[in-house]
Image (cartoon, rainbow, N blue to C red):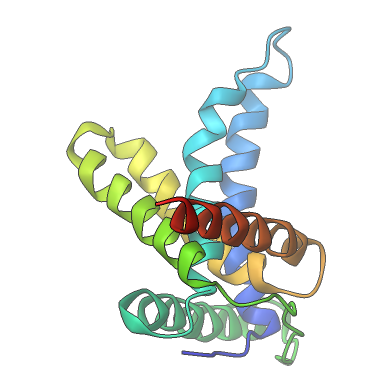
Length: 167
């Protein structure tokens, strides 16, 4: 499902990153040793969000298409209500689609999350979900956020195709 993002959708996608980033910064910036491990669930979710958004169909494609639609709707309302700004479409990143091998790795990454779901604490689950929400919006734009997709998708495709061809 291909959904064009809007400025409001980007606003909504950035919100969880700012929320968790500010909370992490409050507890870690004054400390001599920064606890970067606290951000792993957010980064994992962000990666899953980007990869899920690159699925052009199927269950993951529809799910992440709906996430982008929801992000647009909430963000458009929030942007208009708080600032009065008009909503505009945002350019998407021109990322190569997932290959068969890349698609296998994406399904395996989601399967690993499902397998570990009961073992993950609730705060980390929220961070993974928030990261996935952000990754499926911000990670698919043509700007800085899309740079992650431009690097991640070819790497996943290459690794997945190598795995597929070696079996």
